[in-house]
Image (cartoon, rainbow, N blue to C red; front, side):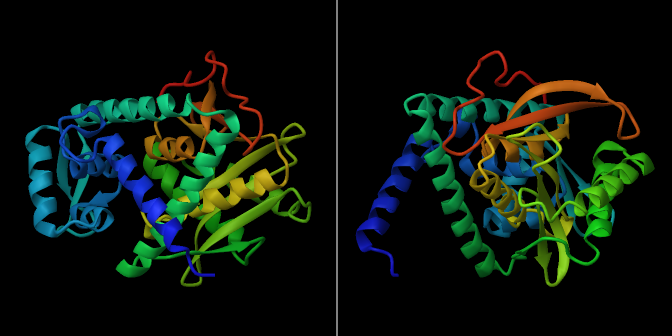
Length: 330
């Protein structure tokens, strides 16, 4: 069925209104004395593993525009450039301590904007906004990725040959690099995945693999049995570097949360580690809030573990208690 012209024009009008209200029309967006492109560049660099070339692709900016913007950010002391370990022709970008402080200020400003707007809505409307934006964002991303020749993944549900080994490998490589975890962590991941795979026939358990050209490039699972009744456990959420920035993570997370909502879980929980800013940002953009922190050593070294929780779509706003919302550090 073709889109109605009136619906298209309504969405265009609402989009223009949001752009104006967010402050995109001038300098100083997100409470910072930066251009919109510079603000978004800092947020992309925060996620890690991005080169100047990749940044231009993500932001859809010309090479000359990216070079000028990065030069200003380097001069301001917000980012640093270093040669890529695999290709000396590329420059890897990272935030300086001053840049991290600036990014945290940007996040705080943006969260305040969203919080103030949501306070004017009832709980059901809040989830409607979140779900609608999620669907619209995914549709726009799919169109843009196809136009740029970016990797576009297909989601496969259920066990796939090599699934346990591949998910374990992606976790081992990523967390070795980001958190210094080793054999103990890899063994825990492999054992947990093997045990869960034997329970996939249960209707409230599900696993998804992101497939890129026939290869597993990401995963996520909903375990409906290992926590108390009514609570879904989101586990083994990972994307390979080859599809990072393509929207694959959002696609996986969206599928898992849609399944959890459809199954009638009142809440979805996940555990992660402190310090993974990009992952936390993605979780919070999907309605998760950090509700608990504790030190643990089950992964082979002491880490500050964080529990995130999200109420089911359309359900009771279980996280409205100000004593728990936002109570965790970064």
